[in-house]
Figure: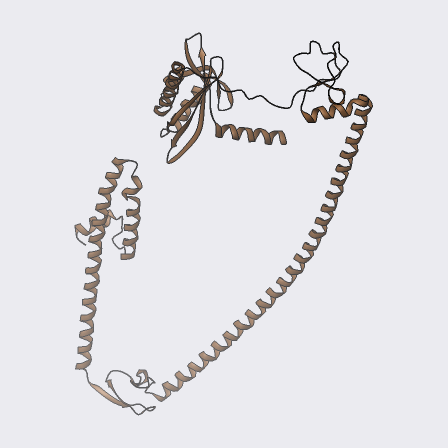
Length: 415
């Protein structure tokens, strides 16, 4: 082994007596470890891995050639030995012997004993005694093999019988267990039905008792009250200081003409009044859009100073009421743990006024974290800070988080 082959063995981390299979396995392991695609996120290590993989492939080619040359040399040596042996056979003296089984004339070397020679046609020993011994030996071997096979068959049959008995026992136990579970399930269902019937009956009697109590407390006016609630109107029982024209069932609608209410019960209306968003001036819209863009750029560039400048001292941050210091601390930790995070405002920004100096900015936010892209319906609530003379963010959130918090609160109350 020359220095070039030894160097190739060192690159592949092989011993000098290693085989071709070991070399191939070492080459595959090193190629997998130093493949450039495994280091695509670091250009420097990727370049180093590329050069290392080239050295590994060159070393593997050298080792392959060396093993092929070694095999060729061994084959040449073997052919040379066979040729010398054939030459010796041809040069030696031969003798002839007739096979006692098929009468074939066989040509044998002088130095080969007749007891170990076989016929070239029938492949039997040329010696009758040796052939008889071989036949007896083969018969004994066949008989032992048959006995061993029969013993294996008996053992296998006994094992199968034991398995069948065990399976039958397990089936019987499973059937008994199923019957017990079925009876237990029937008892549970019956118990549940009885409990439900009792609950229904108790609820029915409880409601009946309450109706009777209400009739006893309210006298003849209970029916009129229920009628007023079902209609969703505001009704006043007559009998005040100024009586208005009686309506249906002796009740009068409450209107702007009523100057005094001296009634026993007032029922509130069932309908709700929708309040439309107040219009926002163009100057305020421009300021709010500037705040949203500043907030978005600070989030995208991980600029915590710029982000703190647009936050108010108290913020409702995704459903939690926090101080600005706590929000900035959590935000810095998030940026540190997720350096690949980016975000952008996509599409238009819808602005509406929700109160005096309180504005709602709604927009779509596209966020990227590692290889995951998500889009959210986000919003910011901005208020006019009189002390600083500028707009500040008092609420930050998105509709997905709001829905999750609502579901969590519903489940908490349901428990």
